[in-house]
Length: 251
Image (cartoon, rainbow, N blue to C red; front, side, top):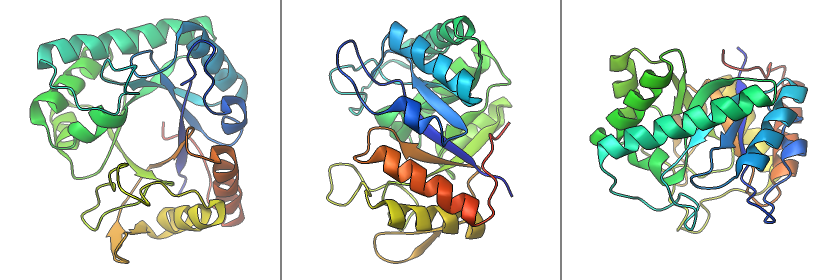
């Protein structure tokens, strides 16, 4: 069965550069482009969308809390109505930028603290789902399985796309190990590649305690800001190809 390989890109800001987007986009099938609230700027977004279009990679809106200083990794108790507007704004902005770059926005992926919050915070989950549905009810949303946002998306008629993470450690309950803990981010390209092949072929991932967690994912994320991100993404793609797993977008 094909699997999508996605990466968070477009996170440079002005003179500050993060990651090698051009290299990452040569090996993934979907790109989550920062919309300016946690990272990125208009020029970076347009350049990244153009690179994605040239590579035949699908573009997604990587929406976030309005938190440039914290890179979107801090929970914000934002009013749900305001959150709806902020997510609508981010998707709309990237739609315009993508159009100018010769492509379109084909999915939405919440970022960082927002991604984690809507796994259990119903009001914010509903706000994100409402925003996506308001802009375009045909836009799929990337999320963790068994979460509040998955249920809200299904209830609203959106397509939830279950995602797994190549370079993040898992807890036995299927949630991600918080970044504040040692070992939460995996950086060994070969180990990550083996893990992704197992995930793609067996739908399981090994948790930090050695137990196996079932994750029937349609897409696997490799973070563009992880140390050695290009080497990790390249190793993952090569390992999937060697295992006979087709890498293709989920649409």
